[in-house]
Amino acid sequence: MKTSLAFFCPIAFVFTLAAQPNQPVPKAELLKLTGDFEKVSLGRDVRILWLYGPEDHRGGEHDYVRVKELFVPLLQKIPRVSVDEAYQFPSQDQFDKADLLIQFLHQTPITDEQFASYHKFVDDGGGVVSIHESCIIRPIDRARKLADCIGCSWKGNKESRWSKFSRKDPLFLDTRHPAFAGLPKSMRFNDESYWNMIQRDEVKVIGAVGTSANKEDQSFAEILRSEGARGQAFWTYASGKGRVFGTTTGHFTYTYHDPMYRLLLVRGIAWALREKPGAFIPVVFDGITDDNGMVGTRDAMMNYKNRRK
Image 1 (cartoon, rainbow, N blue to C red):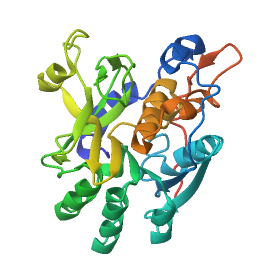
Image 2: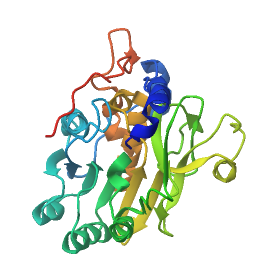
Image 3: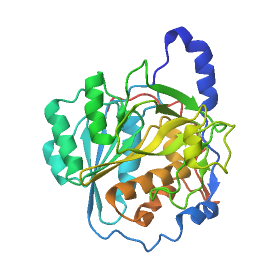
Image 4: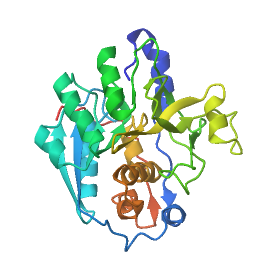
């Protein structure tokens, strides 16, 4: 989200403090969460469609083009996976061919006809992974239609909320859900999330940003009910035969170089496709593992220049 000029100076300082990546993690520690994946393969051909748009922030934030250029090659390395790209909205032919739509963009105006195509894609069995600002479209009547497709969407600036969060605020996961089964109950990032959004009845919230007052021994339901907790950090949604995995996190570009965040995304990709995650696990390590077996980045990437396409 963008910052009001009236509050630019003090808020910008706080945001700068939050704009720091996690320290790299030993590969050996990550392997305890991923298990042995070297010989795991998909049981079918999977066609992924990556939807992106023009970058709308300063560099290092909402880098829709740059993140697309990072992840498409990573996904294309996975045996039996092919990836197509769509700019701003897919064509009907692209919808017809895709098994999974991954979207990371600020939604452009979508017509009723396009919404009908989108909804049909999900109801007919298509999977969706919706990242960060992909859940925002205006005005409110469009937002309700978007929620029909992906489960959650921005209700409006007076009702929905957004904020950066730091490592002081744990990201709690519902590890009872298959998408996050076997993962730690909480992780820590410096990123951003939205909450108080439109939420369809079929949505299951499986990730929430808590506070320093929350404890690991609390259940996920208790976390969601606690004062100050921000739900809708991650959710799942079922419509017809399709599955949607959504998140409001993923604001900073360095987050996509964090192996723990990549792990959450590939688990969501696999869940939306009704596949086991093992085949996608190489993405967790690819391109961010150094010669000493450390995985991640120390680069905040805030000096990037914005690009349109």
